[in-house]
Length: 189
Image 1 (cartoon, rainbow, N blue to C red):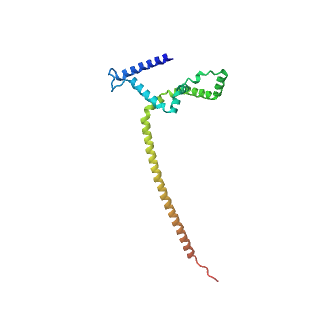
Image 2 (cartoon, helix red, strand yellow):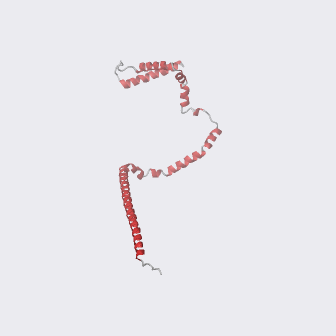
Image 3 (spheres, rainbow, N blue to C red):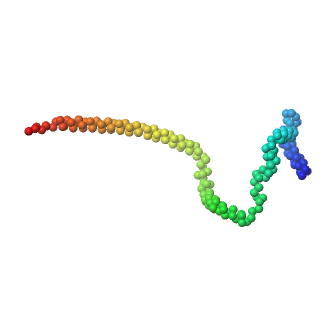
C-alpha cells in the first residue's frame, strides 16, 4: 500500500513538473516563478492545519472517500439486480417507455420536415422578421391612435345628438303649449 502511494506521488510530481515546464518554460524557478510542488505542499500544510482545528470539517474530510464513492455515476451499477426486479422496474415504466417510443416515432416521421429547406432558411430570415415586427408595432400604434380619434368623434356625435334631442323635446313642449293656447275656448252656457 505504501509503495502505491509513493508511486502515485511520483506520478503526481512528474505531472506537476510537466505543467511547470508548459507554464514557465525554461525560465529558472525563483521568487518570481516559485516551484509549484513546493507551493502546493506549503498550501496543503496550511490547509491541513486550518482544518485540524475544526471538528466538523475533519469529520467531512475523513468521510471524503465515502462521499466520492456515492457520487460516482457507476455506484448503482455495482449492485446485482435479480431478473424479476429488473422486469418489475421495466413494467413500472412501461407507459413512460411507450410514450417515449411514440414521440421518437413521431420525430422520425417529421425528420424530413425538420431537414427541409424552409427550416434551414429560417436563420437568414431574422432581419425580415425584425422588419415585420417593427411594421406590426407601427401598425398597432397607428390603429390605437385611430381608435382614439374615432372614439372622440363618436363622443362628439353623441353630444350633438343629445343636445338636438333635448332641443326638440323643448320645442315640442313649446309648440304643444302654443297649440293648446290657440285652441278656441269653449264658452259656458
